[in-house]
Image 1 (cartoon, rainbow, N blue to C red):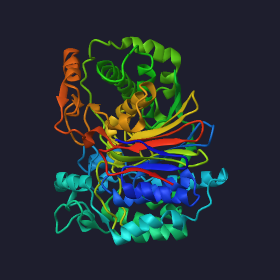
Image 2: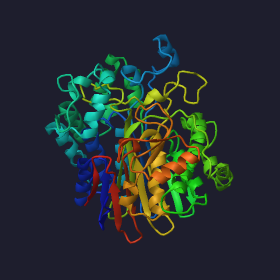
Image 3: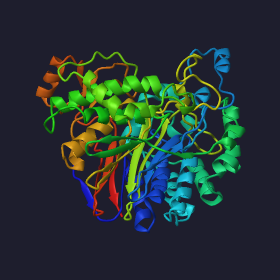
Image 4: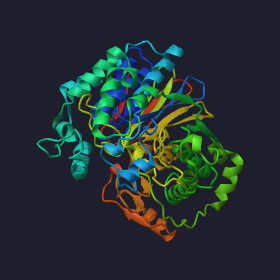
Length: 530
């Protein structure tokens, strides 16, 4: 896959319309932050199986020459979301679909609002909101062609989605899954976005849109109330970071699994590995992933309830000691419960060097499946990651933040480069981030080649129950045999480019301001330049 270059701005996204919406804003003199809001609004319309404005979002935003700030736009459980209420309704686990799965406040719109507020504070916010949302409004009103992945996932999940409130009216055609290329119109969502463009994004929580959302949620039986929406606010936080031999890498703090992504690269950087590709790369990263996931599952939760500080596991002393637990000749046995998640990642860098790594999600494909009738908003099921066991690390409680697979990444390298990167893919996010970073930064592959190269996934995603090490069918047969000899349970999936491996993207800005970027051939997007 080719690497796109530019001396101006660039946006990468898993759908071409979103990348172009962002690039158009850059071309009009907008900042990377403003471009990302335009791209985020558009992707919520044209890629509705992966994200929606009824979901959550996370940002890393970096001014030129400064460490990034993390913007946490995730909502807590509704005030009626108690373990007792779910038990009384006959549930031993949180439902994954329907109104009782729609149990957390949607945070992403609050994140857009807070990001634009931050942009104005640094002189990078000058464009009117109606212009930023215009491409999304137009796409929702006029319609957008159904993508291959939307058609396939709607058909695959039809039985569990078709009876959810509002779903069939918006996303099905005569009660059946749409075909690729069918026109999807979302008139109510268009009206909602248009209203927000004129009334302001805060209206989603404390205005007419918020009142309509609350009424629809209550009527459906969701535990989220009007007061829960009114209390919500996205917030800037310090990111997690760790030092590598090549520079500093950053990711989002709890309740995201950004900690795992940093541990993987922190450990891999300390292994003695050679070669661009092959056994050492894959085995080393997979074994580092296992060590990282053990810590993740022990620590990652709502930060107010974390049993240990996440920063403990990013210190040089801990990483130096932990790397000796990795055997480069043998695989650690791996019975592991994996994390689901369907998501989008996008990146933007403007001509002044403002960089944005952004991720937006509804958790599973189409989230709870509930489409609110008055606003056309699909609501997330992120709260399905809560446990109904009171002693569990992620036990359900009103206001509590759920575990998030989402984690946008960024790096400041010692040679002056800034790397903005990430992927969708639930359990696969930290693994794919590590793969593309290692291939580009450590092994010096061009950006496009690093993203295109065959990938792997330890565990499962997209509803797959097995925990084997999956490799794309293009993988080198010698690599497969070497991994099997080391004790890995290897499964080759029957696709050269599989959605299971995530939709990754990367933009690299060098010290002179030149940009290189690419987005995954496994998705429907690409890189667009201003």
